[in-house]
Image 1 (cartoon, one colour):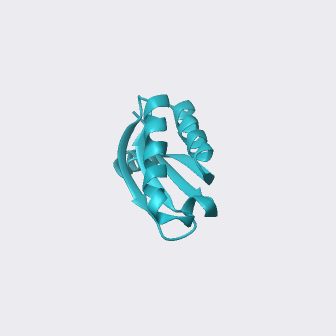
Image 2 (image 1 turned 180 degrees about the horizontal axis):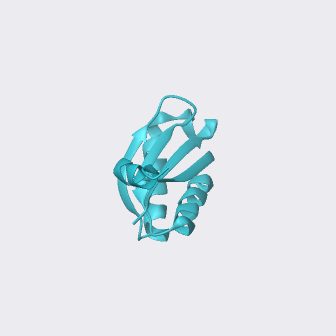
Image 3 (image 1 turned 90 degrees about the vertical axis):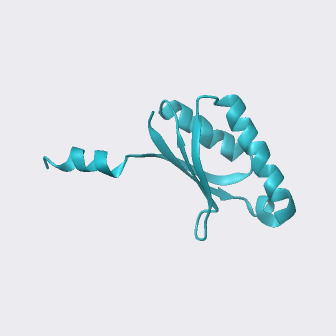
Length: 98
């Protein structure tokens, strides 16, 4: 299954109360699991910088990745970008003939 990276920037109101942040995150995760059961989560990181969170996951196709991003936007994100990620060894195989 292809690997995707989800970068998320939350709205200021969603980040305002740290005590509710965990609950909002759980609700988001449960919604994604329900609507996209074929997604396999690899890892979840909090970030410092222009994005608040980064998730690494596997999905069967780009349509499912779009769905993950749209669910994320519906749960308080002002920006959610999903992008394909290619393992480095596969990348080297692709570029070796260039």
